[in-house]
Image (cartoon, rainbow, N blue to C red; front, side, top):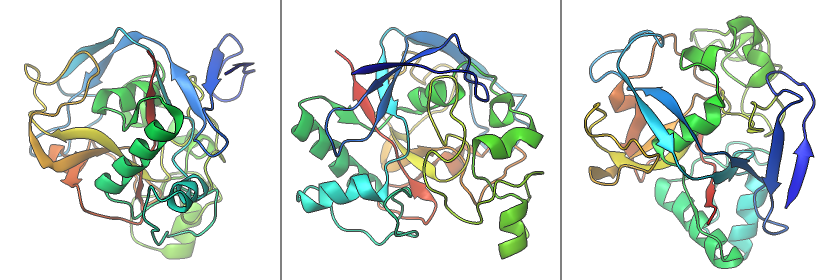
Length: 274
């Protein structure tokens, strides 16, 4: 275990001490997320709306947890494949530093089980609220966590001007240039205050939760995943290099079949801290 003092870069400040964990040579790098609480908005049930409006509730974390500093890469996944714990998957970008994509929820779970067996620690996917708590790192709940649109390209790989010039997909374009036309290597952009990279853009990420009632009275307020709903559908969070939504996503847009694959869908892990 190491402690790092991080000097001012983006919205990481010199006052922040970031604790990192790395359980084995081929394990993903982790950062420790402190206990605390935050207000989390619910996605709309029928139509998109602005990120700065809508119901929200307070989620309290009475525990610390560690989360992947980066999205799980092709290189980290390959170690699991070679050890017999994971299937070999065709990746959209076949470089070791790019996120593994085209991975199903079940295959992502195989990777966490492999890590748990290898290290003796409990690895899993993050819950809906753990992911957002770690991603926002104390920033607001508005679009892109209140990072000004003109600065988005410092923090993540979205559908920006360079992608639009190369691909011309007719999508809404970020008003900046992040120099990536498709998926980029992890860690290329600035981290948030907790030291987590690529929570804006690059690839969307599987989470633990089943599809369930995203309503004020029913959703967990302690940071744990919702496992009492339709578990044929599993959640995912975050935008990707193909996304630039100007409204909050639909509720139905944060869940998908656990067996589905996509060129812009990967994952990062959580490791529990006793």
